[in-house]
Image 1: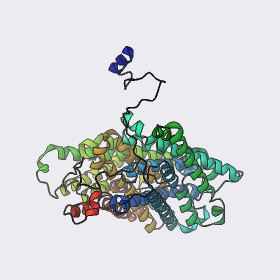
Image 2: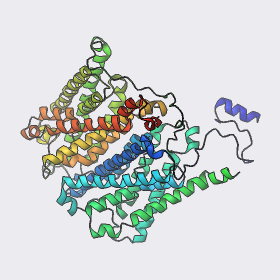
Image 3: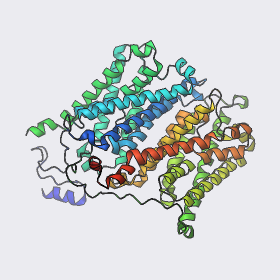
Image 4: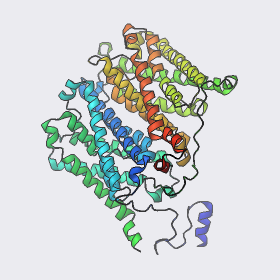
Length: 286
Length: 291
C-alpha cells in the first residue's frame, strides 16, 4: 500500500485503492447512482419543467428534420454530386445537428431528439413511462412539421426527389436494412449511455460540452456507413416524419424496419450498458 | 441525461445556484465613457471583417475552380461542403476569440436577439450593428481588391434567391436558419447552464460554429445562406448588382424575425421568465417546483 499511496500523491492514480484490485468491489463510491425513475411520477404533470421538456423535444426534432431533409433535397436536386455538399455533407448535417441540438436541450429535456434514445433510457429506468410517451409523441410531431416545412418550400421537387424518406436501397434485403438499423442505433444509444454515465461524470470531471460531441459524431459515423443501405434512419421520428409527408407506397412498405430496428438496437444498448458494463442489478441486490 | 429530480418539490424552493444578470438598461450612458465599449465595437468590426474575408474568398475561389469555361472542373475546389465549413468554422474561431471582449456576436441578428432578451443595451446594439456592417463591407472589399475580375465574374459572394425558389421560401429559410443560430447562442450563454455545468468558455463557441455550418449545408442551394444581415449587406454593397439588392430585404427581415422568435422561445418557454415573475407572488404554487 505504501507504493500506492505514493502514486496517489504524485497524481499517477486519482483515487487511493483501499483494497487491492480484484479482491472485491469497493463499497464507498465516489459517485451517486440516481435511483430508478418510477413508472408514474405523481406531480410530474403539474410541473412546468415537464411540459417545457416536451416542447423542447418538439422544437429540436423540428429543426433537426428541417435542416437534414433540406440538405438531402439540396443534394438530390443538384446537377451532380460536386455541385452540392454531397453525401458526406448529408452525414455532417445529421451528426452536426444532433450535436448542436443535444447541446441546446441537454439541460431542458435531456436532449433525446430520437424515440430510440428515449426508449433506451426508459428501459434503463432513467425516466418515467409518462415522460417517455410524451417525448416520443412530441418528437414525432416535430419531425412531421419539419419535413412539412421542407415540402412547403418546393412541393413538386420534394415529391419527385424522394422526400428524404428512408427506404431500403436496391440490392439490399429487408434483413440487411433491419440489421443496419439495429447496429446503427446500438452505436448511437450506447454512446448516449456512455456520455451520460454517472460514474464517468464524477470521475472524469465531466465537461458538458463533451457529452453532445461524441453523440453527434456517433450519428455522423453511422450515417457515413449506412446511407447507401437505408439512407440511415436510426431515428424513428425522422423516418416517420419524412414518410408521412412524402406518403408514397415505397416509403411505407419498408417503414416497419425503421421502428423495429432502432427499438431493438436501443434495447440491446440498454441491456449492454446497464447489465454488462455497469452491472447495476447485481450491485443493488448485494 | 437523467431527468433532473426535483428534491425540493415538497418544501420551499432552495436558494438557486445561479444568478440571472439584471436586464441591461436601454440607455447606458455610463458605458459610453468607458474603453471596454469601444474595444468591443472594434472587436466586432475586426471579427466581421475576417469572417467575410475568409468565407467570401472561399466562395469565389470555389467558383473559379469549378468554372468549366475557364479550365475548371466540376469537382474542383473545396466544394460546397468546404464553403459551409468556411462559414461555420470561421464563426467558431472568431466567437472564441471575441467572446470575452464583445460577446462574440459577429452578426446583427444575434445582437438583436440578445437585445430583445435584455442582455445588451440599445446603445451597444446600434454600435455593434454599425461596426458589423462596416466590417463586412471592408472584408468583401479586401476580397474584391485581391481579384477584381474574378470577384465580379463569380457573383461577389452575394446572397441571392436561387432559380426555382420564390421569395416566401427564401424568407422562410432565413427565418428558421437564424432561429437555429440564435437559439444555440442563447443556450451557449445561459447563466443557469454556466453555473451548473461548470461551464468551460472555450467550448461554448463550438456548437455555435456547428449551428452555422449546419444551416449552410441546408440552405446554400436556396439563398446561398444569409442568416447574417451584415454578411449579406457587405457582399451586396461591394458587388453592387441589381438582383442582390432586389433580394436584400429577405436577408434583413428573415434573420430579424428568426432572432426574435429564438429570443421569445428561450426566454419565455425554456426559462419561463414570465412565470417566474408571477411565481414570486406565490399565487402559482405548482410552478414553484422548477429550480
